[in-house]
Length: 418
Image (cartoon, rainbow, N blue to C red; front, side, top):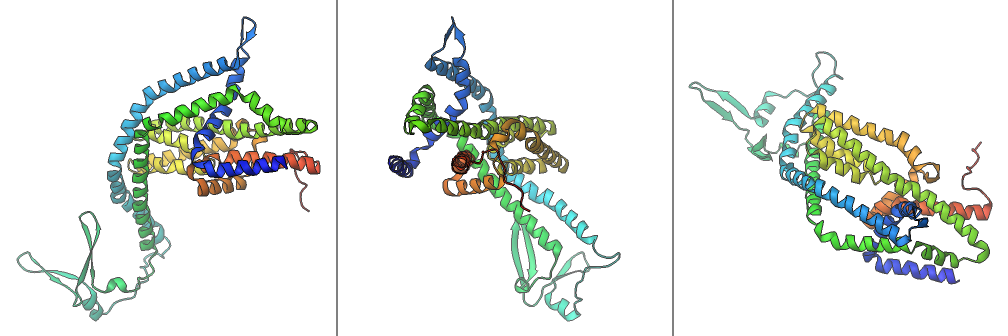
């Protein structure tokens, strides 16, 4: 009853105070990532005496903040310049994609659809009578002296803007008529809509990124608070675990220790393993983008690194801006970038995930997708960020209590269904 009431009160406190829990969650994540480093430094002997925990934490933080400060001093000015330039040129890039790249795609679509027609055959279009042509067509006839006569239909014409400085002229009333089924036109319209929407989304994304860079200094207080909380968690970790262990009956405390070890194995693969994979993905992306001569490659490599934190969906999201920028430099550059990204994620799926995360961190991909969608729906980006670690903890709890209730080891699998 005590544990049940305490759990309900804790859950209610989380619901009430969730707007201010972000620094505490991030501090817990940082403390968990740094715990093995602090333990390794603590084992160092100075005059045959181990370092105190607080001194080990202080040493790790000094080294970490020094490396972070050096990286900021070297990389951030370049990133700010590249991001500002990219945000300024985003409308021009989107227009260039629409004007230059889209016609090539349309020509490729026409060539692909024309190959399905018999040789010498024309598309199935109903012939028009002379009266129909006279009533619905716009005719331009040359006259003597170098001029032209323009014959308009009796119903008049419709002039519709279709871009900057461009217009579409059609006979009045034809817009309401049912269009003939033309696969070419439908695909071209779909691609045009995709590029227009994509250009708007890219501009929004770049504006958000630029605002994020400008707001870095505004987040110094939150960062300092997060680092201070994580330092307290690292220094007092033994007391924290002892407190939770004291809530369990004495004869069940070994089972509690087993549960903590199982949770640590799962989180070690999900959190630390995913962080290592993010760094590897970012490094390989930067190398490939630099080889391809991709514009704004530092910013795009940083985007690929950050988005790789999100499993599965991060791979798709990180490829969109890189391929979009590559398209305005040429089809060859965009194809190279796309093939390089696919190769990176093949290496991640077949080499890095099994070797770095290991068997103890395996979570079914369907459960990962469900957790990501649910976390993003209820809590936004932070929900997607913490979805998989929470799922790993839930899986460890389920496997632990299944073992206690049914005697099934966590490593066993169900027999195949006949």
